[in-house]
Image (cartoon, rainbow, N blue to C red; front, side, top):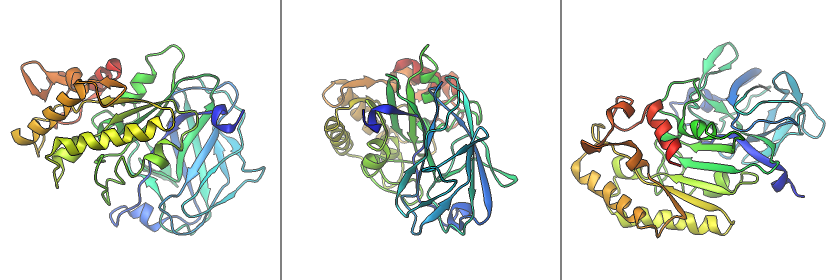
Length: 343
């Protein structure tokens, strides 16, 4: 059996390039140890392996020594590895036991100077850079466990999938709550990036869902199901996409490319956002038109009706009051649970 069938992505994050306001990622590190506390969706009784990537880097970076829950992580038997610019590397398997929903603490030494690094700006879990806290994760973009027949699901999304609106360090993002529904948890890859769109790239909010599809989605081992939950930022972020057909066309293209790799594709309707700072009735009409087309069932293999799960019956353009994190757009932990239960 090839590697593709042996491993399953139990934790993942989608990377972006740093902007000038991202001081740490822009400057990089010298003689620095980074630590991350990662919540694994699927546990393991056999071991884990780590994936590191620097798709937006311009120079090679030395990574290591690395440890996971205090156990040394090796690369071809060596304590460090040279991560080439634009490349991905995977570690040797590390023997350990981690329960479903368990924590993995990864420490990574960077001798540097690294130069600017690919990173994820906010994973809504607190790690450290030396002795100071950070919610960013640099270079590390995946933790795999033995597949052992588990279902593997990736969520290609924006801030709602990333976890905005749910409390940090609580593991109440909707992908986390989805995994927790099952006695034998699926391996879930959270590929949410705040501000991300399906159509347009953005310096801060990353490559669009279409642009990053090959790297972020197809790069995952043993993937069988993809959830596409993008579109609200295409509508509400300037420049706003006001033609529903353009958004639907982008969804269709993602489905076609996913089907080329035998993936099941579940599409999400776009949730309510009345009360958000850029809400207008005209933009909400675009959202409603997209959702109406998705409910006809001709785009995705299955539908995750986020809109129906979250909307206020008294005012369907708004989030249900008990699901509103306070900004009108992002659901709180209870709203995230409603999404998880709808899938």
